Structures are given as structure tokens and as C-alpha cells.
Length: 235
Image 1 (cartoon, rainbow, N blue to C red):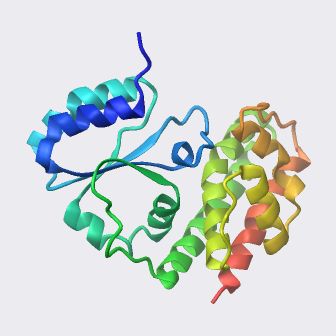
Image 2: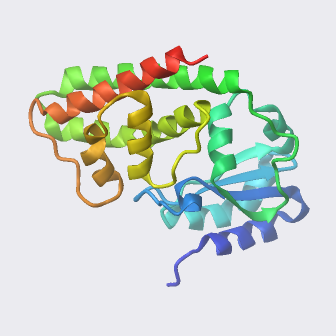
């Protein structure tokens, strides 16, 4: 069976929705050219309205897409997309800086993200990530397999937060994860080596395999804590 490509998915959605489709974007790591296995390709669908006929129309294409290992698209109405940049400022900036238009029209004219909204969300997200990681660390120090899974599972979100911190500091985040970590570490003030094994896991080079009471876990938590402290001091 031929592999289901994002172009095929776009054609099927466009055919199913016709004029109801406003925009279909590919975004995230697949658009940056740095795919993160096994996540698949992220897409964003903007429509004239979201109702049961829409879900019925897209169901065959989305079913095939998710069976191929990709997440279902994020779905917004056109009005929701215009009105939600203050609710999802980090996500909007992530998508704006790494996207490819697959169908429909450019959704960005008139969309602006306020720096204060982005900083507040980043502060909140980092604080939440830090306390959850500490909770996992407290519970799983004697279970390195599950602790490895918890830390590896947090990595993609932490990379997003590092990109956001660089943008708030007036810098353009590198596309490559290794370069991203090196630049963020130098700016924020944590050792880049603390993320070496997490980076290797995210790139599929090796699996993160901590041992009991592994100092690499503590170093990773310290990097997240230092990033949260840095963002808290931004104005």
C-alpha cells in the first residue's frame, strides 16, 4: 500500500470540504524538517464553521490519516482563529514560524501575538512542567524505566519552551534541536550537556535509559528550573 502523504491528505480534505475549507496548514517539526518520531505530522484545519456535517465530511480522510500514525488536525472556525491568539500565544508563534500552507488561503493577515501574553503563558507552562517533573522524580527515583519515560515524554514541550524563551529575548531559535539547546543554555545559564541524552532520544539516536538515582535526571530538572527562573525575570 502506498504511503499516505500530507499532500494526499490535503487533497482529500479539500475535496471533502470544498468552499467550507478556509486553511489547511502543516506545522511543527514536520514543517521545520526536524520530525520527532513517532509523533507524525501536525496539521491545522480552519473552516467556516464546526458542526456535525463537517465531522461527517472529514471522517474518511482523518481516519486514514490517524491510522497512518499522524495526529488528527487541530480544528478552528475562522472566527475562533482570529480571536484566539491571546489564549494560545506560544502555539500561534510556533505555528507562524514553522508552517507550510497545504490548502486554502494564508491565515496570518491580521493575526498578532502580544509579547505579554506570550511571556505569561510561558511562565505558567514552565512552572507547571517543573512541578510535574519534580513530582515524577520524587515518586520514580527507584523506577528508572518509568522516570526515563516521563523525562523523554516532556522533552518536546521543553524544546518548545526554549524556542519561546529565545523569541522573547529577541533571538531567532535555530531549527536544529542541538543548536537550539546550545544557544538557549548559553543565554539562560544551564549546562547544555544536561540535555545531551534527552536530545539523542528525541532524535532517535539512542533511547533514554536512566539508572536508579541517575544524576542526569537531576541535571534535566535543574535545566527546567533555571529556564523557569529566567523567564520569570523577563519584562
